[in-house]
Amino acid sequence: MDNAKQTTAGFRQALCNLEWELSSMRKHSRGLIEAKRYHELNALKLHLGCGPILKEGWVNVDLHDNADITLDLREPLPFRDCSCSIVYSEHFLEHIDYPENVTALLKECYRVLEHRGIFSAGVPDTEWPLLEYAGVKQDGYFEKAKALWHPEWCETEMEHINYHFRQGTDHRFAYDFKTLQHVLTRAGFVEVTRRAFDPQLDSKTRELGTLYVDARKPMT
Image 1 (cartoon, helix red, strand yellow):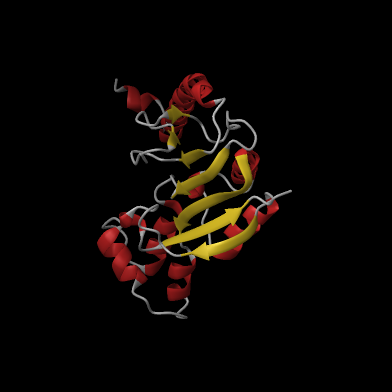
Image 2 (cartoon, helix red, strand yellow):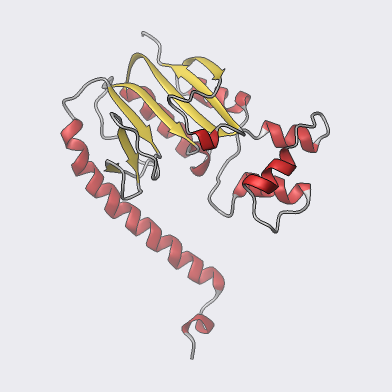
């Protein structure tokens, strides 16, 4: 008999989740060893949740095998206090649970940053589709989403909204500026500002539809 017929879809999904977590644990353990070579360095530039996009001169961190260090970013960062000049992430924060895991990660970013160091992040801009859905703005979000990002089964506006929020099961939370500002401030950051796309820092393919924010660790 086919093994799939002897189990339920939910059970098979649970096994897949367990397999992923076991793999993540092994990679994280390896990453903790890899991180030791950075332990005595200062002014590090961390690129968190880098995926396949590696930045030259940065410490690229992800569970992706191509990363400089493979770490589970739900766990504490293996870097010294005040050892980083900048921490950057692009389209990563939405992939971890809010508020617990996001808050814990941002507090870790705060800890490893030097005083006046910068935390810079980009997340999908959820204000855009919601304003268009409510009829407040007409900026062509749904047409662009259909053409550029979303699968063919997304036809109605609500299907697009749901895909924006979830993207299968990969997205865990949706952000607007007010919410990202709130969680960054709660982690201790100051001068939280929305910024423009920076071609020297950000991915060109992410320019449209991304909310970019900078924040600083205060002097004291």
